[in-house]
Length: 149
Image (cartoon, rainbow, N blue to C red; front, side, top):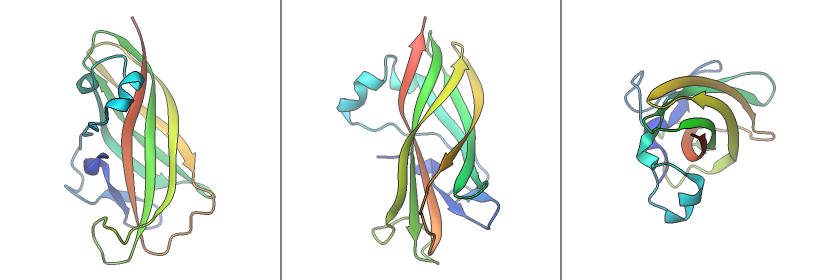
């Protein structure tokens, strides 16, 4: 299960907007996949990925940004974010079985989030050879963290 609240669609050539609850902050829902527990040395519920947005940058790259919130007692030093890019037929309005994945990667983001605080981040990703034919939808899923005491 991804971060459905973070699904974005391409509104125009320069800006991406939330497809659900437009302009509203969204929270990431954790997967129930127990195999991921080694990627989370703290409780999953103590880390949130919020306000993720992306916009076209240069070439085949995209700038994306958001906020990592830490309610644990440890310092978060790095996060892993899985980014999935889908191309849906124009007019579909939502992601469905007709929306193939045209790009997917896990991005390492260095960040320093003290206990019970939040920090904003920005990074750049590239999806080479991902040709858009319809409407782009994005999923951002927090899949791992690194912490220190």
